[in-house]
Image (cartoon, rainbow, N blue to C red; front, side):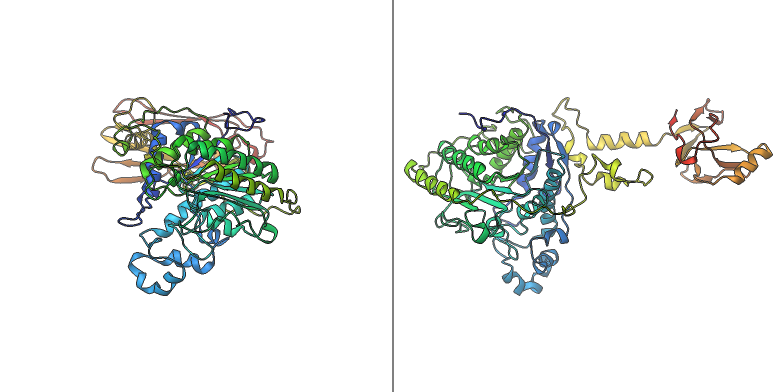
Length: 563
């Protein structure tokens, strides 16, 4: 059976943007707590060792700030999350009860920064999709679907999904949210329960199970009536049964609602063997949902979610990254930093257990019929009135058209350029790997330092030339009155400083002599050569400049430099 709509080519290549912050695995909910951010680091490491990073753009996301979080969450709640720490819990006793922080949602070191990373990745992915700079955005650190406007819930503090959907709504009339976590996506459904611009679809375990919402009869309210779709499931559903409900329901939803963008929450606690789950899905059954929705060729944001058997979480999200990239990956796991976690078989795919499937075909068909009846009640495809598009949530991921947006005469700091680039420590070969050409961080740093210091040993002294270049500038001796008068008539625009470091480490600053003048010329081309002749001979610097067109304006000069 094909896993994509018949009208769409299943193998069309898509541009994929992947968001990961190397700090995310350092956060720790506490001893015995089932939520372990370390699983995201394991996923990333597996993605690297499968070589999937070569097929997509890898970004370190901007950390969401307070103003971005309060587009959904209340100011008081975000301020509370920002200020509370393990060492000042006693000062916030009343607020902890009010905001449901304490047991399931503990206070841990770096809580606010963890929320910033999670929300920042989903927001950045939404901005990237809005600007049509990518087809699929992935943030496995996101998917925290239980968080409410003023309340933490189910290990979730900041609802990155709601924030991302609000961002997508700036450019898209209708956004579809799909949740395949074993728990109902109550936080997202609640946020959009009364609007027709977002349809929420959740496939989840229902009946004496957290969070207790997501009944078949929960269909939305007001303008949002029939725009909340819930498929309650029982224990033990397997791949085949899941496919018989997911594809027909989502096909009908796509026909009825016709969304402009899709957000898919890929919670991995619906997999077999999960520490908190009770479904019996394998990676293939879970991944077919991603493959099916990808086939509609709509802007797609993939986020993480639940998942508490962390070795299977890493397997699933790596496999689904490969699906997004249309890449086949072998079942044999490559050696990686956490290889021992995947024993005893060290395979990618997992086998279903022998637990009984309590979802009979009659039960599933009955639910499907009811959902189809509800979808037929949709009056029409909703639209919105034309209006100006609000500013993006954050000024990130604009490297592609950076030169167009920025003043070419304005310096862009390295910090700004590096803000959205993955840390090199995450892209290094281990000693046991051969030939992936990923740079070892330590070696690359040493090599870079050697290249930057273009120094030559002359008479036991190291001479290093550091030049700051702006316009077309040369330094010449003032050997004639004509040159001296030209120097007085021009503007000094740059300075060249040469520092001589002696063997004992002292540094003397050498400035141009009084007999030298700094002259800004209107030359079209400057050729600069530095030569060292022998150990006992001085350094000779020769600067040759071509004559300029006197009528050419200074702003139009050619400042190209060759050596």
